[in-house]
Each structure stands twice: as C-alpha cells, then as structure tokens.
Length: 262
Ligand SMILES: [Zn+2]
Ligand SMILES: [Zn+2]
Image 1 (cartoon, protein in one colour):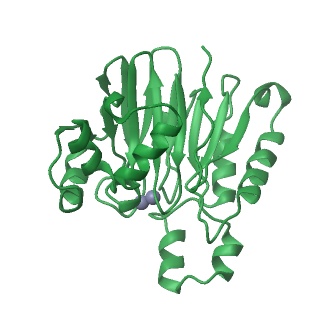
Image 2: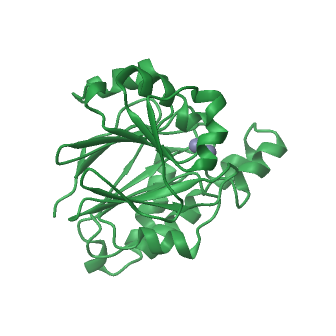
C-alpha cells in the first residue's frame, strides 16, 4: 500500500491511496481541475481512480467530488446522511454507493471500515483502510477522541491524524469568538497538544509513518505541530518509537508518497 496527501487544510483535502490495482481518493475537496492537476503531478490519470470515499459533507472535503465523478465515471462512497447533506453541492454523481457508519465493507481488495468521529456535520467518519497486509488509519475533523476512534486506529502501520491548531495562536488570532468556539468545541477540530497526546497512545512497534494533517493556515505552524508530535514520541520507550517517521501535510503542495512495508 502507498498513499500521498494531495493537499490538506481548510481550503481543500484529498488523499490518494493505491494498493495492488486499486486506486482511490479519500475526499476530493479541491476543484476538479486542481485535483486532476495534482494527480497528474504524481503520475495518476483521473480515469485510473476506482472510487472516491467521503468523510463528511463540508466543502473542503467534497468540492471536487461531483465534477470528478461525472467526468471520469468514478463511483462515490459515503453514508446516507452525508450523501443527502452533500447533494445540493455535488449534484448528480456517476454512481454512488452507501456505506453504513461502523460497518466495514470490501472494495476491490481493500477493507474499508468507516467509524464515527465528533464533528459538526451530518454523520462524519474516519476510515481504517486495510489491504490484508497493512492498514492506514485516517482521522481528521474531529473535536475529540473517543474510545471507538482509539480502537479503530490501534495497530495501523500508518496514521493520518488531524493536528489542526495551536491553542495560543487560535486564542490570539483574528478569528471572531464564535469561530474560535466552534473550532475548540468537541465537534470542532483537534489541537496540536491533543493530537500529540493521542499519537502517544497510538504508538506501537508496527507503526511506520504518521502524517499530521488538516493544519490551520491561520492558527498553526507546521513546525509547532511537528514539535509536539516528536515530543510525544520521544516520551515513549525507545523500542516503540523506533523507525516511526512523522511528516506534516500542507495545503499548497503535494506530499511525498508514503510506502508501507509488510
Ligand atoms: Zn469539516
Ligand atoms: Zn475539514
């Protein structure tokens, strides 16, 4: 399995994942044109995408879903509440498949397990995606961490975790009070300290790579999020953190390809 964050942040989120002959996008929150451009940069034609799986209906996750689906005949997977909340924005889809939150489904050699997260949208989910050998745990846009999320993300070889904001930067920043409140709420976004503490809990010997994602451009800095995550790993015994790499996804540029070894 390998994956690549095409872009991450409040202006648009999309991640490309490939295993065997299967190629999917997790969210498609930039314009169709921009997503096609970014896919071309990593050598992937839009016609090669087998499915788009959607976490929730916020525009930074679905902006390009309708266009890509219609343009390349790509089926879209989401839960019913997300489909109905997203439909005014995505319009007609080439094909769509409903999944049920909490129920794993199979797709072309992948097992995709959507699980509930805590966010101000209709029925937001994270995913655990396995190909039988390795798993990616994918969790952004959650205001808090639950036992269920912990359970689903445990033992994954790779994690893509939200590290949205720095509390001080948010508090002292330009956002109006209602928006600060929304971001900090249990249905908002995880801050760097909470994300690092969660990462510390999730650390295990099989973990290979952690991507910190959905960083706020206004209320965070990549180096601050990174520093918190590294400190969390360093507070663990050596054998557990051995070999774990951390990278920070950003909005403007495409991330590196992350290859997971069996
Ligand atoms: Zn959201
Ligand atoms: Zn988002």
